[in-house]
Image (cartoon, rainbow, N blue to C red; front, top):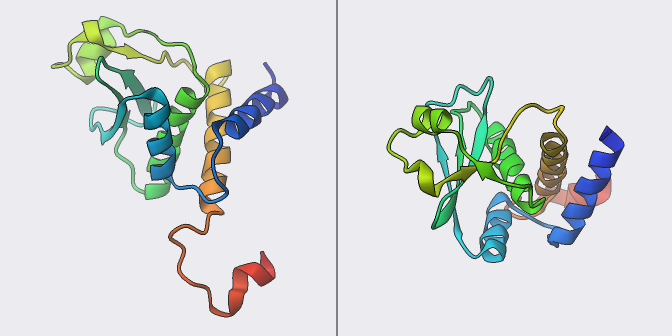
Length: 160
């Protein structure tokens, strides 16, 4: 799949997800929880290095779990979470997690009840499409007026 095709798929998924003009990360999470009929728990996992693996989506028996590496900025954290949410929006196939990965990252987790999205690289079609969709969602959040302080002299309306 080339970049143009991945972008087209991501754009279609974003429109199909039905976000309002003004969206927030929390709104996206709430909408996904409603659609999936289960809670999504987002936590930092200090064991993730952030070099090879920044985030991971685990599908447990009772909830979805999005884990991310420690980050230095809220923007980076948001991008990692949006990437994992994008996999959910795109309905990417899930596969059984390997015993080695599960015991390394989460030694107390019962691997029989967990599935994880397999990750290889951004040259992988699913990863490329999820990253493009995450970028689109981030742009929507950045351009949102939700939570923005009032602007003196309507600066944004005048200058866009």
